[in-house]
Image (tube, rainbow, N blue to C red; front, side, top):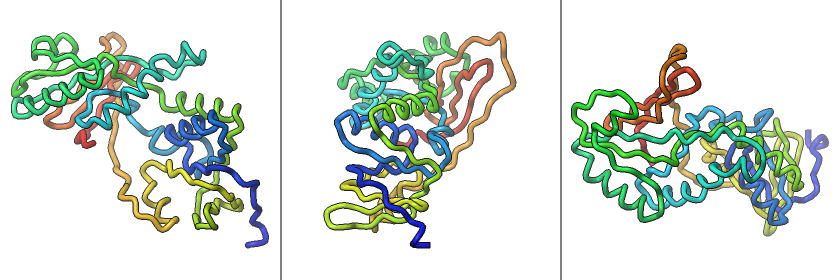
Length: 270
């Protein structure tokens, strides 16, 4: 078995994972002159949690770190087609958060944080929120709406970054699940299938599987997969577009997806 393992030319950085994060990291590193090899267990990019996501992007978070990340990334999505001449499916349909009375005061504190960091967020009465989508107003104190919030096509975004990365010399190896990460001097040896890569640094961009990848290097990263369920309604050809609407109290959400409604349940944990 060992005789069939071949060693690639050394890379500066190995990125594990070719989802939206891995593709972005690889591109940004290559743009700075760094030699990058991306190792991905699937046969194509964005086939893990990236491609299975609800595709939402928003500034309405409760922590400065998350708001700051969104304020850095959303302008990239919003201007992507103008800058790069290719679409990534960004649609500013907005996020409408419906907030129960017992969570209204804390929610307004989050709005103050978001606005302090430059995020455009509108505070709406229940009556104003009803102009966006029809809902049962019982128990609600108000709502907030983020006009920058919306959706992207995660496959299109990832494919665009993979193409741009390749043009800058990033080497992608699909169908290469990483099975070993070990120290060698000041750097690392990464094994994936019949390939060994010697590198100075490793970026763990395996998403929900990051904990398992970290364990290969003897590190503890408390990240685990979380299963969610997303459903689509039957076609609604004549229906008006619905923003990403979230009932903060229950975690139920829905939005338009073509001529259907996409809906699911989450706890909005961050």
